[in-house]
Image 1 (tube, rainbow, N blue to C red):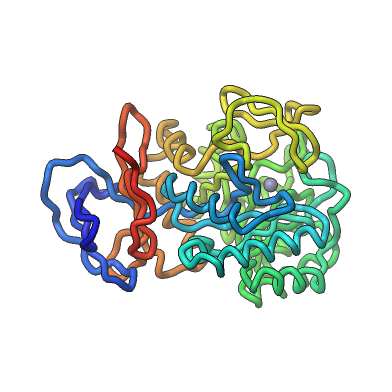
Image 2 (tube, rainbow, N blue to C red):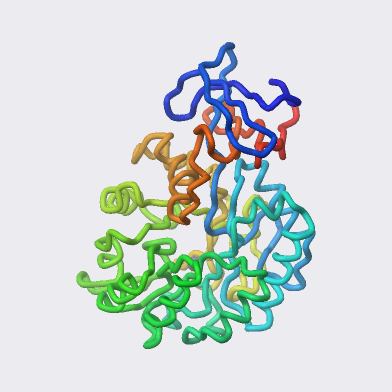
Length: 387
Ligand SMILES: [Zn+2]
């Protein structure tokens, strides 16, 4: 590989043909030509994570948050092939959310490459359901009805970076609020909800286009039908976010979501700061202590049946989904790269194509697991594996 010139060769992740990718200094792919050589390195579009709370001990939801934490998270994500992500700020006090948003904005301004890797902020809560089950591990003290004045304050604090809002349409003013969000360019995602099917339909009519980790953040027991899961499955306008770590959803549910949503399925990590950490009991601000098992399952200490986010990064989730046999490797990869870009309306993140953004990953499949060898962001090599 030539690290100086803007050219890399490898196998196309989907067609498996040997290709040569060249790009221009402005960070766009110039050409995709037949390549030469014998190496078995794969080239794939960069991963896009629409929902992530941290990882490797770095928590994006704990105060005091520093710009360095945001920068470190971003660097670790490059190591895992992520070239665009949406740091996810969960339910918290009004001022705490504002402070976290300010720090994320400051980090984007401090480091240009970090700024372009953060596609926007995902605010998950506090306008969600307060019911036990749907609210998951979100702190009930801070859950409230949608408040446009408050949201506007947060959007200003973020430097206008909030791009995704997860809410529950069960609040009486939800449809109005959704319309305001959508008209200001925010993707509204339905999640942590106890909404009726009629309220789900009203939210979709108002412009909601996504479901947040569909099938999780739900009651342990539901009426067989109708219910908010069937309704979201049936609404074709809704993209479905899925946590495919093997713990959040049984394979049968993933299969049904894939069949119902076809190409409107997204993989998210929903990774918490304990991702990549040793197993054990940890204290977190989201509802007390959590336990990370040696198998990588993360649950509330006091209620082991309730998961507290995922401890798996997107790269491993893609691999697990492909290994499950529910879809092919390229399909799983697209659910974590091309499709999230489409769901966010990012037309220039168009995969490995001429004119698309030069955001891609060089991969090696070693002993059955994927290893990132190099990550290229905006045409710049931001990570290279050693050895
Ligand atoms: Zn959640």
